[in-house]
Length: 377
Image (cartoon, rainbow, N blue to C red):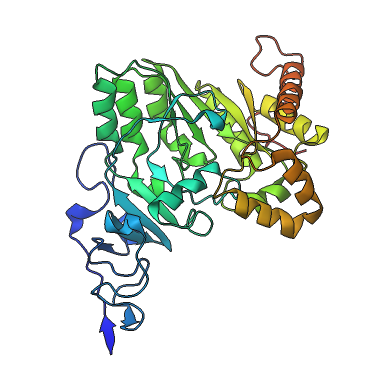
């Protein structure tokens, strides 16, 4: 016996961000299917997909669905499954282990199409019943009402107005943002509350919201940190397959600074024994200085559960001789040995001082011009 599953489309008012407000508007041509978790028995199936009863029964037999499917409205865009959910909380505390200069964060997306093999946010997919390896870049959780929730939390008398980082659990300007357009509402909510914030991203899409960022900067402190852990594009293709090239990210940094939005470089992650040589560190800091970066913040690779397995698997395939050295450096923990982290931080600090990053007077004169692309080496 075979069961015909027909994925029902909702009317136009149920598209992501339909109507007015802070949620944006989806492009109808990109919307493949709109169904509730109860209606959508198989995530990613094409409309009118035929599935055998032995494989999937509409009464629940067969493999258990991921937990997130039972709570979300599911849509599929060009092979990417998006789970639309209400935000339980907009503001989340940043774990100390992240070693980032932020205490609070807000993220419209969990999961990221950039597919960075080292991303510490991968482990969060486990709590949703998803695989942190194969699902992180193809199954994205979308907090469709984040802007409204954020407004309520920022207005709470308990909120002290601390700076907020945007985009820790998934790049807030990844391709899904072109569909959902959540960031304009988030930026407006922070600006209306005059709450300082910093956007973390690898994506040139942030330039779409340049005018909004400028307006926000009139009433509060606004910053951007573009993530560039290294400038070797061969490494980027191996561990950041869906991300913009380092050169393109540095050009975004330059464009933001030229537009009056302070942009630094989050030098993350530095990959031990892969991108931590003196030449790698020098080239990255030098290019950050050329882009006009107002700061360079080094972060050494973290290997929490859910990330460790995939990254070390890649290392075993591509650089097997490094695996024992990683085991010595990390042991059973998620962070590298403290002495190693201090040494890397000191090297980057010294290089940043040499190239005048963030300084009033630069020892090294910036050589970029509007008509010249940034070189990688």
